[in-house]
Image 1 (cartoon, rainbow, N blue to C red):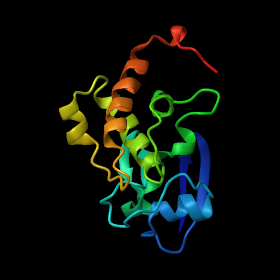
Image 2 (cartoon, one colour; image 1 turned 120 degrees about the horizontal axis):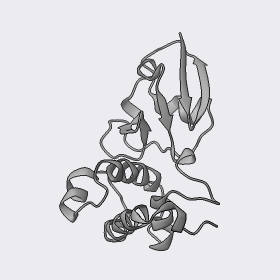
Image 3 (cartoon, rainbow, N blue to C red; image 1 turned 30 degrees about the vertical axis):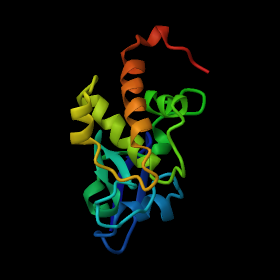
Image 4 (cartoon, rainbow, N blue to C red; image 1 turned 90 degrees about the vertical axis):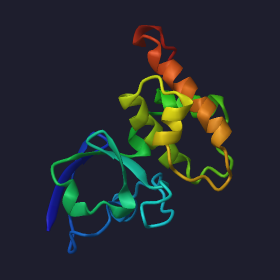
Length: 162
């Protein structure tokens, strides 16, 4: 089976035997994009969170056959070192990661949340960011989410770029 999709803005196609193969393994093993992490394999922890057509999904339970014709964004496509996404910038400013393993999933979930709710309350964050962090950096993440919303609200022509 051949599947066509866009990933991080680039056209991509993969030939796969089993259409039920989780997208996570295509991203990591076939496309060599290692930022998306394997955590639980049951869509419970969120380490594998990516965007499909702008929606946050858990790639460990999203089949490759479901991606045909869609647009995928991984942490590698969220921003660049020279022009980080507001979520990435906020994570840096607040020194959020401890071990860092789960952080790409949190950043992807946060970016999707901010598209839906540009200025989330703590309750919005509690209801929508349900990923798991073994290092318990939730306090710093919450501060960074509010900071990312603040950065997002600055008009583009006033944002400082590296």
